[in-house]
Image 1: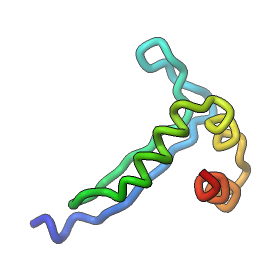
Image 2 (image 1 turned 180 degrees about the horizontal axis):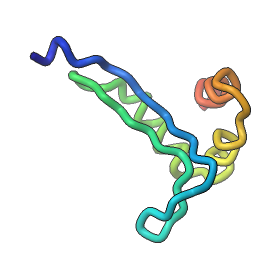
Image 3 (image 1 turned 120 degrees about the horizontal axis):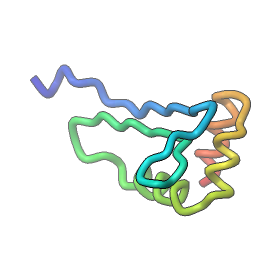
Image 4 (image 1 turned 90 degrees about the vertical axis):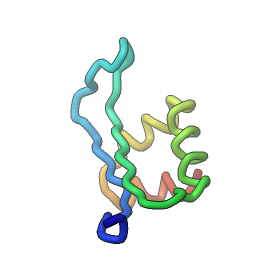
Length: 74
């Protein structure tokens, strides 16, 4: 039943990057949704992907609060 599926975004920050198709990956986003996701989420994720500086700021954040502030500032 689709009503029982929770909606969430989960983020993993790896201590050391893994290689994914020859590129180092250190941030992993998992999106679980049962309906159309807010387009703003995709906009923010695409900006993170395209901006090495923004990605580094997120990787270097020391707390969830700092991480969230960076995401909200996009």
